Image (cartoon, rainbow, N blue to C red; front, side):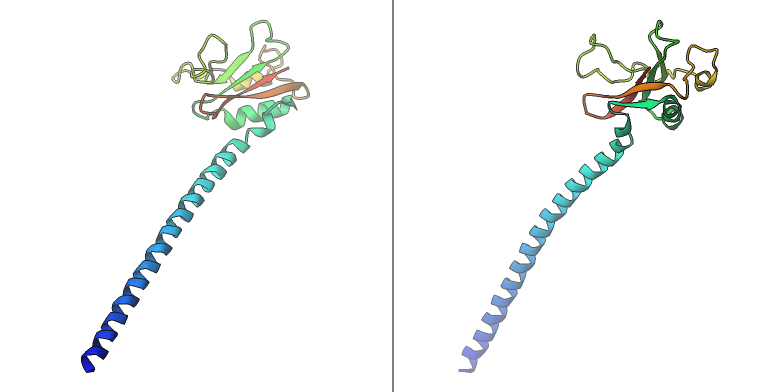
Length: 162
């Protein structure tokens, strides 16, 4: 009788141990899935926030002072270019600031929006304030703004056309 009682106690202990291990494994697996979902959501939010700075320039009309502010804000950004076409420089096709980007239909979809020469920075910000310059940006002028995205849907540049 004593042996049977001991055997039942040992069997109950083993059963409870197996049940506890099973519960821990199930909780661990569900926590892993929740962590993966949270990481994916965080990644999506991070992408949206990084692109949010450019939404104000997507298909809107802005003033010349906002154009020069954008130039100052993004002038040192890597792999990024700003193209400005004013009334004065319309004949020469506008001016790039920062990196010049591939924006013509001569390039494949993979090349569109990519930097032409990463070692070449263009444009002089001082000329946008000089009224005698072709690059002069009238602070009260109106500019149509748009963004340039590459094949990975990353914003690579801004376009401002008067």
